[in-house]
Image (cartoon, rainbow, N blue to C red; front, side, top):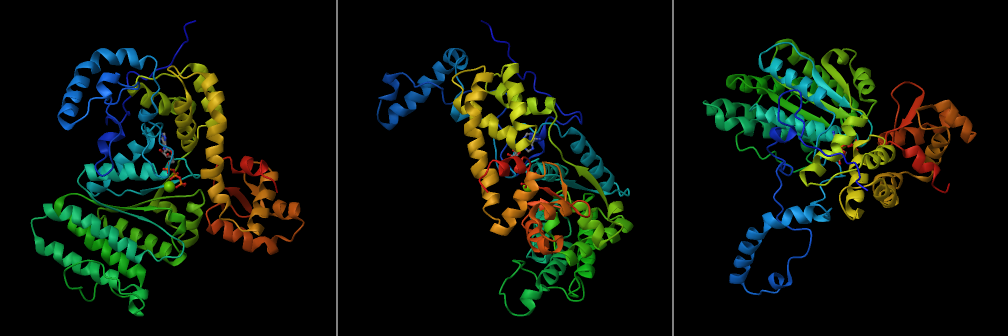
Length: 473
Ligand SMILES: Nc1ncnc2c1ncn2[C@@H]1O[C@H](COP(=O)(O)OP(=O)(O)OP(=O)(O)O)[C@@H](O)[C@H]1O
Ligand SMILES: [Mg+2]
């Protein structure tokens, strides 16, 4: 019986007119090109070829392969789902083979870049969403877009126990290094590097003599600029000077901050104030953030005007069409197809969460005997994918919680999958809400739960409640 299949040709192009995210990228390896020439055939080469020893013969072997590649491939491809060519990429910040369903955000960021470069007033962007929805991937893509426009770029990943001073200094150093070779006045760059060094050296840890850290900048530190020790003043001066260097070149500077909810409270306040100051002067420097869903409340708790500084883009699950594209476009490049039933089953399992799409797609590909991948293949492969998620995605996070924190999360899980009132969690545990505050606060700090509105708490990890309900208490 002929099985109906869904394939990817032709590969879609984002509405922005950019030929897919691959064109933005410079620093990250590009995904497979759309036209695939199989270097490694799925089936074993003929015995006569495999047994030929010696280096000279090896050369002849490649020539032999080269000749056979074209006639053999149509025969091999119809049957093969070669694990070596598995395109799916479950991982943290791992570039997906197809960045599906994010055209709107990409277009919005294009506009931000264009407006900032022209000196127009513009709010920067902050991406928020649950674990594994693709915030880091999108942030990296934004970075590539800025680099594509010859902007200077730098990126940091915030940590709850660390001031942003040094990471920001290192990121700004990166950004300026990108711009420096194109600047006609080396003394302007040197001047800025002096200010940057002064900023970096004003780190409180360094001042106490507890650190021998050096920012790796060869010019002497400037005096009287960005070195007051007050992060708000210093960041503002640093940003204004950096924006000045970018203005000389008619470009901008973008500083990307991942896990932004982990920036310490005084540093958030300083960062917002510096961005505010800069937005008033129209300097071409933007701070682009990504973080968990409660990031907007973290920012507004620190500065009430933060909503006017940033445009919040909530990054969510992929809808059905996008989730299908995330699977079939990369498969199409390898001449592998899915039946519609297989896509139904995959959507049901992955629920549109990008990490799950990659995880289920990867295992289904590895276990499917041939193309097209069918619903039966998904049924067979799903337990293995779930097992991998249980260990890698859920288990590794669960391990980080103490017994008291685990009790708290189990109580949350029993109340359902949506965010729940903290009072109900306390009631379920038969405890006073105040006595549970340490466990709750520590879980928030560990990034396992979040509180987007007062008195309500939710899991940062999608499907975590389901995972916990399946665990022995
Ligand atoms: N638009 C997309 N289409 C397909 N796959 C995607 C998409 N975005 C992300 N992915 C995949 O999802 C996975 C998670 O992405 P990423 O690490 O960016 O998530 P995240 O939101 O930063 O998660 P975390 O909060 O844990 O840092 C990666 O394997 C990535 O390849
Ligand atoms: Mg991330």
